[in-house]
Amino acid sequence: MRLKYFIPAIFWICLSCFTVFEAWSCSVPVFRYALERWLPDTYKGVVIFQKEMAKNEQALFEQLKNITLDTDVSLNLQVQAVNTVSFSEEKLKGLLKDEVPEKLPVIAIWYPGHMGKTAPFLTASFEPSIVEAITHSPKRADIAKRLINGDAAVWIFVPSGDMEKDNQARSLLRKELDSAASRLDKSPKPVIPGYKGKSLSYGFSILPLSPIEPREKFFLETLLSSESDLHEHRDKPMVFPVFGRGRLLGALFGEYISKKNIQGAVSFITGACSCEVKALNPGTDLLIAAPWERAVLDFYSSGPALPELTGVMPEAPDSEIQFPPDSDEKRKNINLPLMFGFALVGILVLVGLLSMILIRRSRRD
Image (cartoon, rainbow, N blue to C red; front, side, top):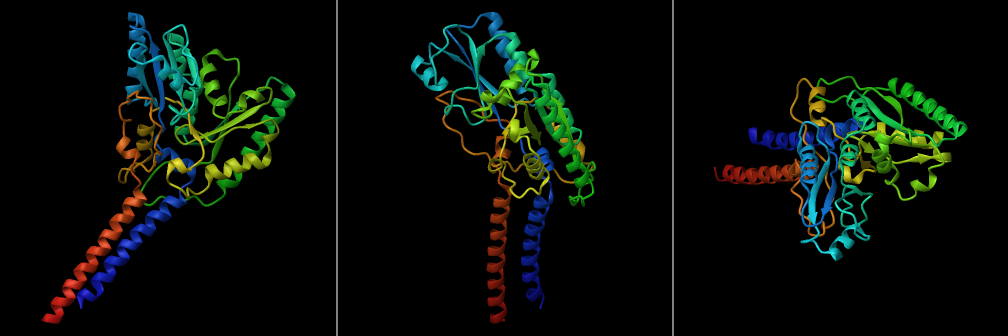
């Protein structure tokens, strides 16, 4: 009699666990899920030098590398030194997709997953000012602070210099964001079972970024090079929505800064997270140093640790330049729904085998 109810009970418990997991992941807004679950993708860079670095250059390289390894700030960058003596000019041309600069050392940086596929978006003389620009800027620090403090998204506004166009675009952006926030604040909040976190908010802030600010030159280049044609539209106001752990959704410029497009971006950022695998979602991660992990832990006063569900896509070969595995690389490759599915199938198979054995024994008895 117990066997009759035991096997169905196990089956429905397993099925319920899977259903609850799916329901939870689908009820959380994209911006909150991205902040809690998606590790920033890693930028890669090389410092190209000839024969031997000078002492000050070697010290600068070590400084940069130490910053990338600092777990407190979590700068999503890996760098390696490349000596032209051991790395042929032909290979360097293939890597850079261009001629090797005559004056060395230089630093070259690629977007995540682009090394070996495209030219670096930055190639510059390796000197203290460029290292400072790469590792830190006030605007990027402000973006991280706002996202950690609860903004659903930070909308970077880059003016064109035409006051009339800029004022019109910014006014429209502010109006639509205020309207969206008001509407969303009145809607039911999704519930995350088992956690006592900070209250869910739908704040949207606008962060102006001057195109002539020296300390933000690298950051601006990162934004403008994120799409192939943005440099051609520098004479138009631009908007870049950023959410999660510094994930850039895309760019709007000129006439594309419209009610429809703004609301479309808001709908994605605040909508239910229907796809937990990060690589299948739109966007590009920015290069930002921030204590993301510590901030996420501060969100919750109880509950189990949250596993990572990023699902990183494979990258192209790095032209024989070996980088150490990213920190948390094992976590980055975990696809929890798939693992849960395998576990569920395994449990059902075991239950089936157990039931067959018990039924045969009962018949013998």
